[in-house]
Image (cartoon, rainbow, N blue to C red; front, side, top):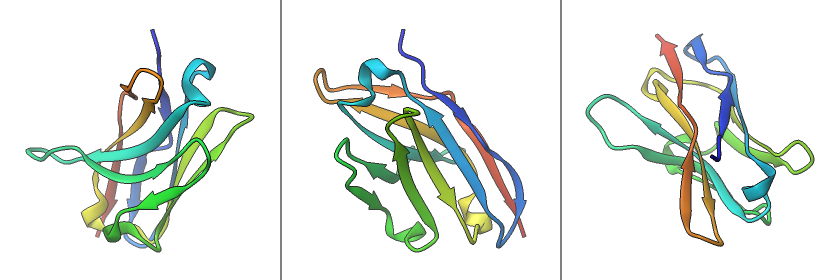
Length: 117
């Protein structure tokens, strides 16, 4: 069973920062596109940022300039640095790995991020 383990969510005031981290098994890390999604009640899960196995990154417009995605190949982690947080960023954040050899998606358990105004 492939498990993605997340950490780093919590409660922060508007304008603050949080760092989310996800550890991905070595069996898939090197051949996956990895990303962070978020979901609010009643809404679909949406992509926030992604990073390819080669290191190319994408960030959605709503968080551009505030969120940064990165990965550490040695530690097999993908990190989402979130700065200048806004109440609209409140959601459950999920780590994702799309294993390119099988096109199978793997998900973390989700971590709550709450931004108070």
